[in-house]
Length: 96
Image (cartoon, rainbow, N blue to C red):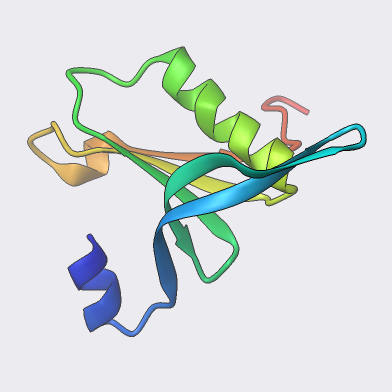
């Protein structure tokens, strides 16, 4: 994935450590996302038989903690990659 992002001149950081602020405590490395694309999109990559609600919650939590809006959860363990993509949006409730 890093190769393709680089090849297409898309700015990204791999294994990006992101700080987390909790009340008056700042954790310099609150978590590491697999990719941070254009300093806006958090990408988590998996290779599992099926994505779970916990995988989705992980990305949603990353979005909330960093106040970013869009995340992608990608499962590479599928026959067609489009079947392994899940777009997640911070502060969005389906049906509203």
